[in-house]
Image 1 (tube, rainbow, N blue to C red):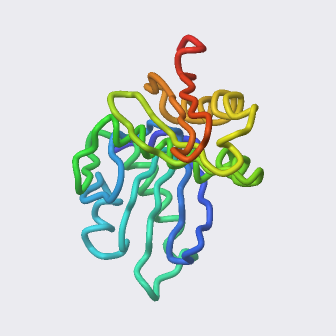
Image 2: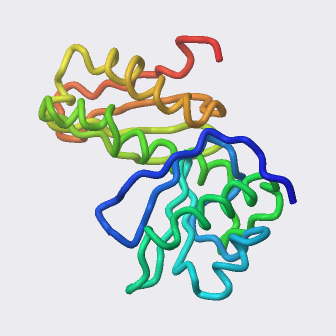
Length: 194
């Protein structure tokens, strides 16, 4: 099995046993817990050298068992991961993944990342209400529920970031909290051609 060239780099997580390997969005067609991977990476997982592998939209979390360290296993895992990424069709998830699952994961990643930090820094909150057939509905609350710039934030921050991870986004809709005096439904996904 040949090793492909990927933009791949490790990032530390809050758990010292887990390294997040950043990969380009869409590299793999699986999400969540991995039950099987090709080549040496799969062998490491089956043998217990790796505790778990979890695939996210733009990253892969690989956990070592307690008592094992990344100084010893880092380079072999990196080499095996690069090798396994060369054959994306041979990865198996523990649960089947739908396009809506992938989109939901991308939206969650955006809401937990920089765009969500921006919203929270202004006293607002955005949460997913639904994801169905490429259409995403988000509820705005806090200061977002009455902010005149909410539409701009949703379109220029959230939608742009979501499309980077999930180009299949068809529409992003936002509604304010049910308690807001002026309920506004903003259709933003149709403002700019994909």
